[in-house]
Image (cartoon, rainbow, N blue to C red):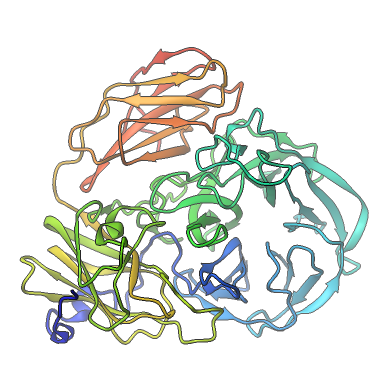
Length: 591
């Protein structure tokens, strides 16, 4: 039975300006997935989707394009995005490619022509040329003014390139050239499956990955041709890179692949991406992340700092990459340290609700898994979800990830805005308003609110005012961030890495549990100071990794974390085929 909740709660409590960043102060942090108005699909089942993102900086604004969005967005600071529904673009085709050349913005998507505009905010585009039907295109303008089109999207074909003539409406010059092929027999991370162990598919390519989504970046005279594998529906969707001294190649496989990888955590995936520079010249990587619950292509967007180390190694900082981190321009070294260090206080805490629909219990909203969710029985005002944090904690931010259970919405036509209130309490009886979105008119499916000042509380309650989409009030995760003000976990003092002698793509990392730890992060890489890849572990004290490259040595460390902070680990060398114990060493230079 649904418990009645008095709507008087909407009028008592602390002033909103005290709790929220509603005093004109810009938020300094964000939390993946990016909170934009993801469009509902045009076909059933009703679900939201955006993927294959591109961000470019054009005339002082950032422009964001993504597949199946019905348009694109622009923003001056990547905080608030304005949506544009364009005219003259084949906007429903997958994999947009966007290039800035002088005062002109060029656009292409898979199997389409090239289009241009000088006024993208107006949304008017014109067709320029037809270089051919290609999958997953990428338009790249070199600093000498020459233009190249890279493309590829297949189980067994290459990523190819061709030169375009900037003096003749980007028509094709010369013959195409092959850039790279996949090789999942030696590259563990290219293998399909949520754990890179393969998965059955129908058709003739049952075990082969998709090699797709090229993107070119030039840095200090080196060309970094990036590509995605093994498939957008897998948690292991990632980006690798080949390098060359010429835009035509030959291209050499980088030994540190994948450079963008997020197989664990609240939301996973870091493939088919775009590497771009912000207004301060720092690099970022905007990626495709997956929910893949209602549909294999139910996807979202994520943003990670990226960069090149002193040796030119490209890497994206996905470490706890769905925890609060700083916006571009806020952190001194986002490439290596961008976390706000606000930990999830809600993980596996006790959830209660006004009502529950079937198996969609309140505990699903505190399990740090975007694929599960709580659903109320109705979408009525007053349906609520409450979390007991077990003790008074210091709350810094809250991310409300709404679900779309039994939604009927298609496209963007109906008014799709969420209205809700979040309150806090120390005893579960007397409540104060913390966040008031009861008059909100924006579509905020992953609404993240950074508080203007921290608040102390034990209980957090989310109450529905209006819920869009046609289904009942449902929440994927109510994530409360801050500090439990307790001790950080102990250090992982011993671990072992076992490399599979029969298949060097596999390794097992096992460790002794650390005091007060609720989770761990296994970091690894090709050198002690290059541990750029990671696996987050919430259950247990071991992880099986199947994403390594045969013939490559790796180094590992294990960090521990809880709701009060992170304790960094030690390092061990893993040879290609023999078991060795961890050899503790300081890693103070890492992250």
